[in-house]
Image 1 (spheres, rainbow, N blue to C red):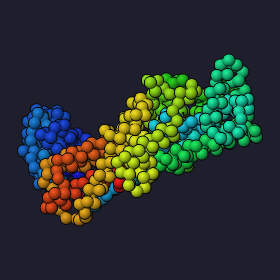
Image 2 (image 1 turned 120 degrees about the horizontal axis):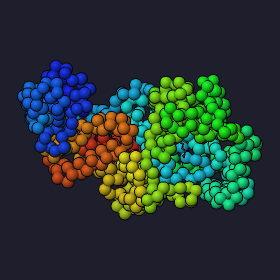
Image 3 (image 1 turned 120 degrees about the vertical axis):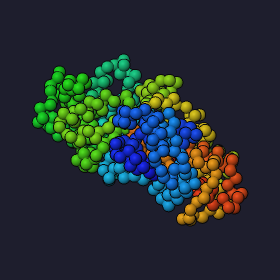
Image 4 (image 1 turned 30 degrees about the vertical axis):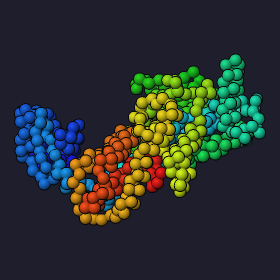
Length: 562
Ligand code: ARG
């Protein structure tokens, strides 16, 4: 990046500030082919300003700009192609990474501003399904990415622990439940009851009325309802926590929907005060006609509140508590409508901070091309998937490196790494076909492949008895250049992943870096030439630092040995 900045400076001076520096920086590209140089500046926009052809302008610039950091500058088809002075640039990039270590790429864009991140948010008394994995790992990565960019992330697990479904579950438990069974295997048993309820309710719709009655009782604080609900909730959190621990994910808050139960009346009052609340067939709504959206339902005719009411209360509470500059909601794209609606209500309420509310949608986890659904019982238990991945990682270790210390810990790091990476390497908006086989492949574009490359470098550094130093690093290998350009682009990749809320940028990047290094390792005999050994190991060390940091930003650990 520093070379890009350098080019921006040089161009800006040459062009007498005709274009802003930010604009110049945006325009500079990385050429697709190596023979077109390391940086390219397109002159098509300048053609309008100077009323000359892009190629003539490119030629003038190429002949006019000079710098010791440029080896050669060429004008080709309207582009200025800059070839960097490889030796000087390589040395500087490696020195920077080695001195900054995991802080390489840190950038203070956020100035400490709080960013609340609503993530994971499973529903209690239901299994933590594959559908929630995406929110958990994408949200966790976004927290790490925003933090590296100078924001203060606050991770909130907005548990689905309130709503009509708990009325239904209470009814089902009272009719068919068995305390002993639920204690033994809580979520499975509660799921069975939930499925049974829906099957029976299809035949006997009065069950639904009972469900609603019991939810009303819950909202009114009925003792029996509350104690059952509390029990379901505790058992569920116990189960979810096991999974979070495996994944190495923590939260700053577990305030779920129920937390807002006593904060909703105020929302209703505020809406009334602002004359936004309308009566419609006994229910209370906020009209969103001017936004071309259906009205937002605030209170049902029986006086109970809804998912949206709780989200309104939560948003206001978060602004008052954390004074967020941005508030992210990492939730599947099937809920886009819901977010549009309640964001619009907050806008109508006159809260300027509504601009910081951002829904981060993502695609579905499909099974045989269809959406997974809890109700139909077609669901994969994520904990089983993760345990399976850990088991396979363990088999791999026993086969290849049976004497490895702390095998259990490494198997956990690699197994969970496989699951997390499999999700994050896809652009989040794409649907993912669920395939355990694909997820647990340890070769190709996978987390374990990157982790393995990292561990391989660690042992190489040990074997070569590498020691850090501040001296110039004289690296002559032409084969090293693709690695250097990748290392240089890390800060840009980070920024891109922040702008697009897109961890897949980093996932693809670490794969590219690992591949580039392995290619180098296969062609250059790193330890053989005493004179070049230090420079080559410095390159390996730089790659190790950036791979580890890239993995960390995705929520993966990087074991020293595998
Ligand atoms: N519990 C919800 C679900 O599983 C997700 C909650 C998302 N967060 C929110 N603030 N609405 O569908």
